[in-house]
Length: 434
Image (cartoon, rainbow, N blue to C red; front, side):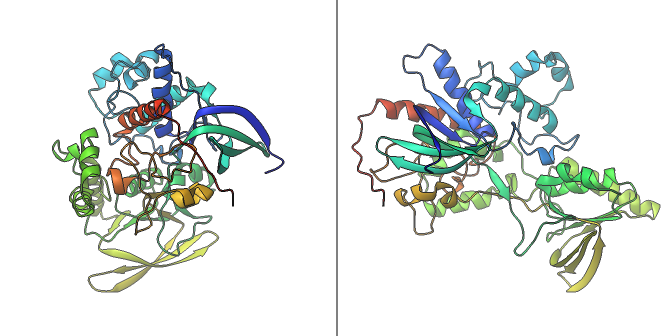
């Protein structure tokens, strides 16, 4: 710590992470400042990746977004914004072509290009290849220690916004390796293969699992691809109009105002809009492919439903995967050249991220953070400023906590909260450095 370079400027906002959530916030602040505001906000963001990237390992050609392009970084907050997906298309001279495409759901590759385009326009407020290693409260502000290029620097800020995304969720005792991957790394690891696999095993029942199964089956024309999951079949995502209201900004108000019991019911009722579900079109495509293989008498796509993973023995060139068909208890061993866990993601542990700040935060009996409606962590009066969370608030704000659907509105709410608090009377601080 003593060797760190101390930056004297105190920023109004310091963002940790620069994925879509904090990118949306950066845009909201930029629009506030450019509109001639007499109270401009000075913000800086730190991202540990070397450049902007959002789930690059799952940018499979042909896969599409599950949310409308109208739920981009800005439109539901400010339809006139020049950071919209339509503005991106116009800038790229593809607007007419996209209209003729007659779709609300761009490919994931194109949407990633949109995000990069937006991030590139805000290059002056973000520092890449910069990892935040510690946040300390001091009199009147936070001191944030950032590692960049092997050196440490201390940056000062009045408020901190945490948006550090998701991490891979794996079965208990699962270990990744040379030929055992999580789907988040799929497109990064595929080029490492020196020869085409003869058998691939994909564990998982959600959209990512189905996409990985589809991709491997299409890419390796001679390989057997085994999809392993506990359900009897892939379950379709409910994207019907009324069910989709759970993603509306107003639904966040309803969820936040609800009792814990009602919150639990709402999450259970609408899990099939997002969790362990697959687009119906992809389900039908995989079924048709499986059926045609049966007709031809050569089945490469094997759907091992009602089946659980029992054991994995890794080896240099793959893994021996033991599975059990649960209705009968019959077990089989799959000699796999490649095992992919497509078992979902989870928010990063907020306690580990907060570090010393955790002791100033309010936690409930279940050990979860208490978060205000404006996404501000409930803290003691000792803290010199506010800590905001983008993601990790599913228990208080509902299903859109870590999703793109409500990102634009959420960014605007955080911006407005920052502005309102800046006009509020200054609190007194008595920090303990023990």
